[in-house]
Image (cartoon, rainbow, N blue to C red):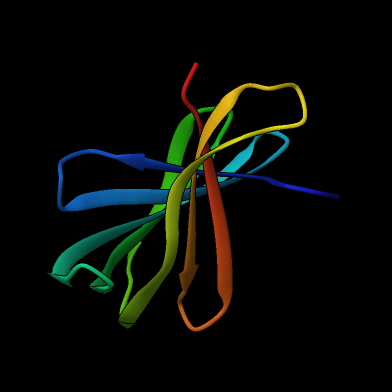
Length: 101
């Protein structure tokens, strides 16, 4: 089974990384602190599990780390639509894209 991954900002410092697998959603709440133009400190706060949109478990999360921004820029996809792309080392490599049209 393949999950859908998304990221949603609640405030400029608090965001959620979410994975949806059918009716199950796992949301990891995190806080970011921008250190400079290429470094972000991330602290994980809590994880919430929801089924059919109803939370059934919330647990404190620990950990975090330093995320390094490798690239941020606007590109055109194969259909000619603009997208914002961010490539980050977390230490895994993440590529995040956001439609701009």
